[in-house]
Image 1 (cartoon, rainbow, N blue to C red):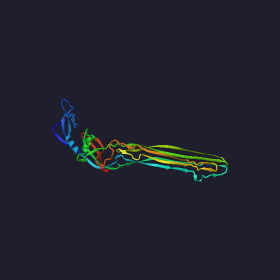
Image 2: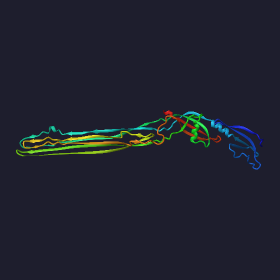
Image 3: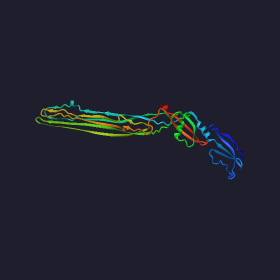
Length: 348
């Protein structure tokens, strides 16, 4: 049976080393409703029946509990692994090349034929020359990597009222003097992307030939002769296309230099002949020089790489929220927040 006295007490939470103050009073069950004390439904209230006539009603002091939890913080250093994207700073383009010119000259200084009386003479100088070239680009991405293994962080544990645990509210609380005492930013939104580079090269084989024929027949009082020259060339070109993917990185806008190159080769064939002479006739000398030039081309595309989305560089200063967990607790409408904060000056 109620004696009208209101007693004060406290509940100890060993996990958080926390005292929750309350008041307690014995209240009689009502006459009209013998199962109710009149405190049913009140917030922060426990009702424990004693017997058929009364119950122990305990009311927690929410204002005092809130003030105590708001001031209760834990902070300590720790280490963890964090994911930091690589940064693409440029793409270097080089070229693998191979060239060889060709030149063949018939030894015209040895083609001497002089005859008298009757008879015939013929000469047939021939020359063939080969040239070849190949070119293929090679790219070297310039990438800066950041080691995110076992980096130092600060861990903060504190309490916020349930329903007031958005990221913005957590960052605001972290910035206060009893925690980080500085602005804490949300983790950067990195959006690494791959880059597809297209490399094109060529191979060339060039052949040149020259053929000359000269003939002179004669007798004591007559002569006949002829001279013929011919030439030709052949070209064979091959094209190689290779695609290379630069791994996912972040970066600002980039320009790729030296994205095109060409090489030139020459094939020369000389099958000239000198004159054939007799006392009754002559076949004039023939100049038969052939020269062909060929080129191979190589290219790299694209020549410009657009910026990635989100943050395009690794910060070198400022505090950032790496990870956060919100644990609904039994502490009278408050949640425990565990936040890990990283200082990007680590990479300065």
